Length: 453
Image 1: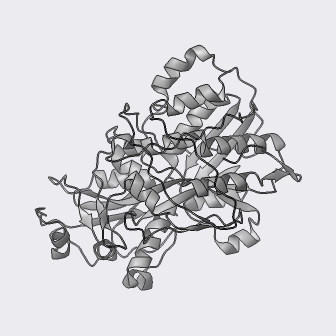
Image 2: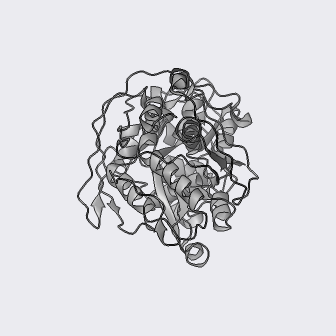
């Protein structure tokens, strides 16, 4: 059976080495500082990862039978095929296979695999649903983990949007949820009092633009982004856009804003940002996972928005960075709170968390980091979370299997983040997530005993 060390090599083989992470001093509030890691070496491009198909497996499905682990002799083949784990989704069939590991100034995630812990070789079937924002990363994690780390575990994650993921989780239809935003306080109190939001990765939301003949990375200000989505800026030749994009020959072409038609954590991030930078937006639209957009057309999921923009000349849509990169679109510049135009590259996304305070309460880890004051921060950045239950799991085996997978994602799995267009968790938040995971119990007994480092 493949050891954690071999499986870690599969995931991190294409990444350059980085110093091992050091656990910070335990204090009630931790200030996060994002440290730049060494630049990544050139690595092969993986196949773009698709949206997961909907699953009908109930939470209490029969446990899967144990499977035989692959022998170490399969390691070489697994290394070569690790990232190409699934076919393209229908909504992404026309997109090019271009991954985030080729993005400018991308950095390598820290190699934080623990030598003191290995996941237990359990047999379980686990289902989850939720945010499309982290779906490409989660699909890679699931494939590597179930094929090379713990073959006895069957994992599925359906990319249905944060809103539906929260509903499924609250209704006990899934074992875990995925969300880019916190469950409403009223729902937590009445429906999910023991819900924990485990931060798993950071990412940026960017305006993805399709204007025939223009491949130059465009510049946007808070005012122009709000104006476009308010319906106040309706043509690409608007002087306000030309002012920030000197030398770009914008055509006389109508702007088609594309937004999420489903309840979406990506929408929550986007509208949270616009509400902070535009008083008009805050007054007329506000923030949330589902709002009434004044202009544009809707599409379901990050993949749906990406596909709509790809097929519509003059369109602009907000998507997680990896989806735009997979479709071959350039990273735009967005003016941040310090007045600097920055791209949603790894270091800039990470910088958005600089100086934030992390709650010592494991049920209060969700936080907004849009419009950060850090001078090099990309302003539309966010954490994305896995929802777990702190004390109401009843199946010890399944709870242990889930905890092991999530711990693996917080350690070894972080090595895949940059390659797919995300940013690894800042060390303080990663430590806080591990501590929160260790508070999960079944009948009062912790389901995982692993080092916090």
